[in-house]
Amino acid sequence: MSKAPKQSFYCMNCDWEITETHKYLDGIKCPKCNSPVMTGKRSLEMNINNEKEHIKKQIKELGKKVAVSQSTTQFPEWSLFKIGMHAILGMPFETDYYESLLEQKVCSDANN
Image (tube, helix red, strand yellow):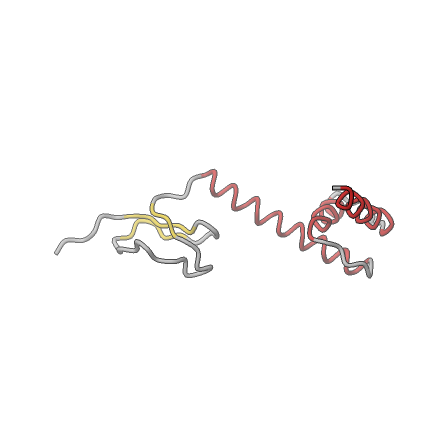
């Protein structure tokens, strides 16, 4: 019996991939995150999108660390990105400003 042709596989959700293998892996799930696995080479656009999502997640985590260390207010996910970006830009954490954003969001949600 001859070997299968070489193929590459990558996860649609995370950075897992295996390249140039003779193994038959159709229908498998990603061993890292259990997401669907695709055949072929990962495109540059897909790599960029994955990297952007990873960076956004890191910025939110930074925002959460800053918010927890500077305030007792529990900020929602959407505001943590803004707090993280302000921290990266070197802007001071102003509790009143971020709390006013929460009030504006609540008011606009109530009007809709």
